[in-house]
Amino acid sequence: MHFLSEEPLRFNELKRRMPKMTHATLSNQLKQLESEGLIIRTEYSQIPPKVEYRLSDIGKEFEPVLDSIRDWGIKYLEYEEKRKK
Image (cartoon, rainbow, N blue to C red):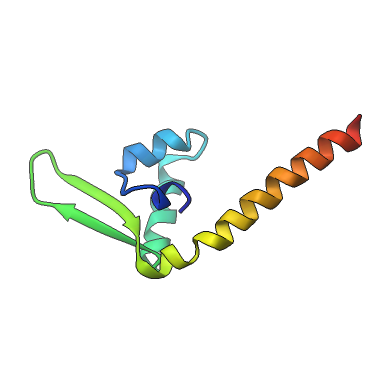
């Protein structure tokens, strides 16, 4: 969801930003987020086919929570680095 907070993205653009995630896992996660109403999948009728994913309004409201989790993670990694020295 973090990457979708910046702009709508296509599947392969998301995959490039998360290279360790498998195709199947990303596909399943996107389907789950869509079914929960957190993201919107838009299909464009063109050749080649184009599909974009973006945050829904309720998904956008979740951004501060994600930001807090990311910030905590960064602080925790810094804490662990200092603790190991």
